[in-house]
Structures are given as structure tokens and as C-alpha cells.
Image (cartoon, rainbow, N blue to C red; front, side):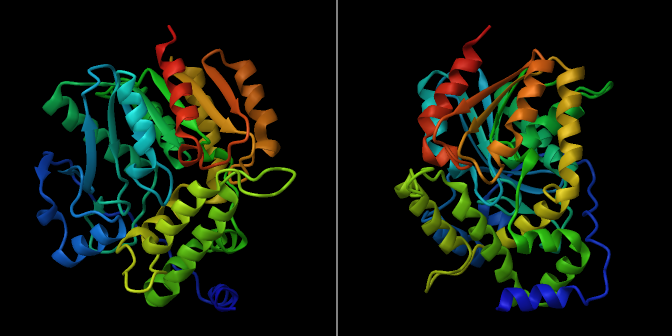
Length: 371
């Protein structure tokens, strides 16, 4: 009832312009410590949210904030960059990362601002987390890694929102005069080009400025963000078409248990200090329904104007980015562009990196080793 009341209330609130993006200047990139990024309370809460004693990676101060990342070059092979989905963190790629390293690859993974241990540098948790900011964050991180480690990426593997980020990055880097060249290969795992949202999120999409102002004014109402995210999560894991039971039930429960902690629904644990707001920012500036067609045009542009080789991995039981509704259109793209390959994986849903990371990593290795 509270969800219906608050959403109805927002419809009567005078529309307010959406939050403007934090102004940023190009600055020298700096390695920093967790103590320089967080207050002690923030760090304690985030550690508790992820059951960690301390962050596992390093921190980079970049043009928009602080990026938490892990680099594993023990494989000594080509570098693969992993970009996670909305509301998760680099933890989503834990098994895939291990599999890639065991196959001889180097792996770079990182957290988006407001996710995991990364933090936006603005004074407000509400900021315009749009594609430009996403690509800026990745651009700065790669600049730092190339300077410090002397390695350049051979591929980007992005899940859901991360797939859109990889395409947007190659689009920017393909433009004349850009200092960076495109990454030769992109792997899109259930990319969110056709994302379907629950009703509350769709209503919020229609009034982004008003809804953001509501969240600013009534902090207790931010529970709606976590509720909508977890409602979406109920569709994200593959269900058997006949029995309707979850195929990867243990993996679903593990993620649900973590989400309950992150959104403050476990007694005795505080919610992640930035995650709900970051999800809202990304939803309004990247995943809003009226923006998705533009992202699909961006994909076509990258396919048409660059030499990017793209692998699209999609579970045939994905209802978050609905497979049945959109596979025909994606297959038509595959027929029209020689540099796109679509790999349909049986009995996988949207959260395939959690469901069966071996299937995903095996598909990645097969694609990466192909000449």
C-alpha cells in the first residue's frame, strides 16, 4: 500500500528538473586508500554489507569520484575487462573471473559508482549517471592501468547494463581524434537494450524529476527503489517452463540474501549507503524506457562503423530483457552484420553470470580464441 500511495503522490507533485550532472574537470589520476575515500562509518557499513573485513581491491581517484578495482595479471594473457550489471558489483564476476584467469587471461573488474566499494565524488548521492559518466569512469581506469601495468584491453565483457557501457565506450573511442582506440572484441551478456521493468519503475520513468525530488525530500521513501529492484529480481533467474520452479534455486537464494542486506532488510545490518540512489540515477539516465531505442541505434552504429567483433550471449529464459519478444530482431541484426554473433544458451535467465558462470566463461574463451 505504501508503494501505491507514494507513487500516486508523486503524480500530483510539481515536476522538477532532473539532477544536473556533477561538474568535472580532467585531473591527474591518483591511487588512494579506502581511508581517503570513506568515513569510518561508511566503510564499516559497506564491509558488513559484503561480509568483508576490508576492500579486496585498490582505489583510483578519477574525474568523477573513486573507483574500486581488482586486476589479476597472473594469467599473463590478453586483458579482459568485466563490467557488471545494475545493482550488483564486481562480485558478480567472481567465478567467471577465476575461469578466465585459469584459461590464461588477465582480468580487470571494477565497481560502478555507488556500487560495491566505488563512490561518486559529488556532494549529493543523486547525480546524472549517464553513458558519458560510465565511459569516463572506464576511460580513466584504463588510462591508469595502462600507465601502471603496461597492459591494454583485448576485450570488454559486460553483463546487462555493462553491455550497454561496452558498446558506448567503443562508440566514443571510434570517433576521429579520440586518444583511445576501440577494444577489438565486445562480449554482451544479456545486454539491457530491451530491458523490461516492474510497474512502479515504469511510472517513475514517466516523471524522473518528480520522483528524484521525492527521494531527496523523503529519505524513508527510498525503500521503493530496493523494493522495485528485488521485484525485478524475482523474474531474473530462469524458471522451468513447465514446473515454473527456479532452475538455479541455490544461486537465486544466495543473491536474494545478499540483496536483502544491501537494501537494509536484515535486522541488525544497515543498508549500503549509496546503492539505492545509484540504482535510481542509472535507471533515469540510462535505463529509462525512452532511452533504450537510442542505445540500440548506438549498437548498430558500432557494428556498422567499427571493426568491433561482438558476441551477444543470451539465455532463452531471460524475462528481464525478454528473449522471446526480441530474439527475432537481434537475429536480424546478426544476419545484417558479419561482426555480430548471437549465442543462445538453453535454460539460462537474465542472471546467467550467477546461474552458470562456466557456460558464460566457456563461451567467452571460445570467442576470444577465435581468429
